[in-house]
Length: 360
Image (cartoon, rainbow, N blue to C red; front, side, top):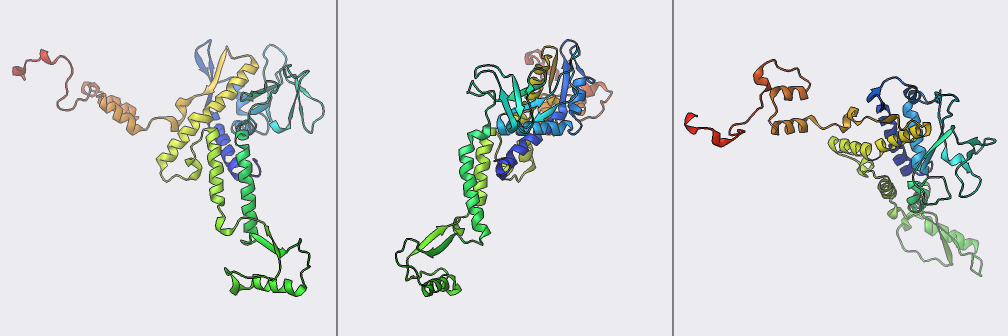
């Protein structure tokens, strides 16, 4: 479905691209020292997972597998020794993975990759990210695409049928002499039928034929063509299973709506998926109790509140002029009055009864 259906490719690639985008905001936090770390081999590995992939491309490839199959396998061999470092890691295409185990209820032992000889032990070499699978005998994840598979199959057949109609110049049926007729059609009758059916002056007219015929549908009638609607329906069901706003693909007239949609994508799926990889990676390394690897949402511009909303909130709380200037990136005014709250006319704080109105 990914390579043959445009809606599937569009949704999956959009999600994966956003996961790749937010991956650059991943930071490493040392729980023991209570601080963020700028230099560490884990960060070096994320920046250059291997000779071919950058950080963004690696996370994009990982996300494509995760979206399509519900799982993603990463080959990341841990070096022997106390340091237990990983020098390189690769995403293994999920559709090429065969899981090996001693018995149906036994834990995963190794995997075999289609097209490669032998197998690879799981321990200290491969880790998997997956969506929970109700089949307790399987170590594969549950694909969200599978939830929409039946619907998408129907859509695929409909779109192929419609494409056939277009390729044939709008011809949706072929008429031939009836094969079941006991009396074979004469050559003159066939020629007469051909002339009547193909004569331009007979278009949209009812024509009486002197022989039985068979009608072979090869596509939808031109009046019933709705490829755009078919794609929209497919997009909507995919957006539903992935928790995406359909308006992202169906058009946005306003920039603010597009920005809000981007914010939703980041918060609902891109950041959680990137954090899932980080959690699984640290767990695989055995460093979950020592470090925390996750996306720093404070650095993502689209997630920040709009300045107009911030200023409106600060104005309502009677912030000082210096506080307003600081929120806008301006230098403070070195005057005492600039640090006083800004109160509009008719507003005061404190005990009103303590004031003597005669003194005002």
